[in-house]
Length: 209
Image 1 (cartoon, one colour):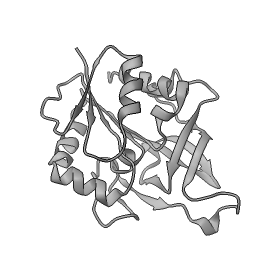
Image 2 (cartoon, one colour):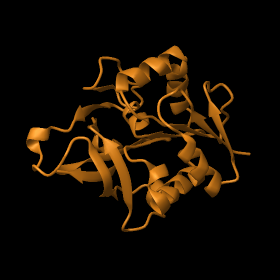
Image 3 (cartoon, one colour):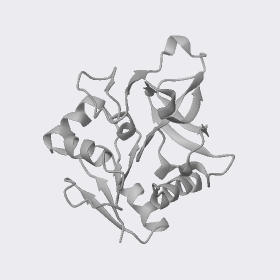
């Protein structure tokens, strides 16, 4: 039976994520500080809010960084990074000197207040419409899908083929990344009501042929 492992490394509140997962699936949801129990067919979720450098230091201290990199190479395990957890999948962020996990090539950049219309703030906060590239994860999403965001930095993958979701804050930016069995979303599905539930359901049901 499939298990869903949520990496619990002290960065962000994961209660609402656990609650939403328990509503949509019978799979066992486990909070873990290490990943040796993950088997083929399981799902791994890397949540996170706050500072990129702090989060990477926690992952490194708990010996989770290499475990996550290794799991990313196992096509039988699907991985989802949420908010800061998505940014950590990239090589680096302007926010910190610590390197990221490097699972998806790219970096994170702060929204430039000087380039935004005066009514737009940093952090980008609130509900935003999202579009996406074709991917099995998105087949069942509603056309009018909107998600809840809170972030000051945005993801810039090196290659367009790693871009999955888009949103706008002044300009269009990448709000979700993908590489093989790994997905990262900048928004909070667990705060996005039925839209977030649809996305998490798609992730739980996602099989790689």
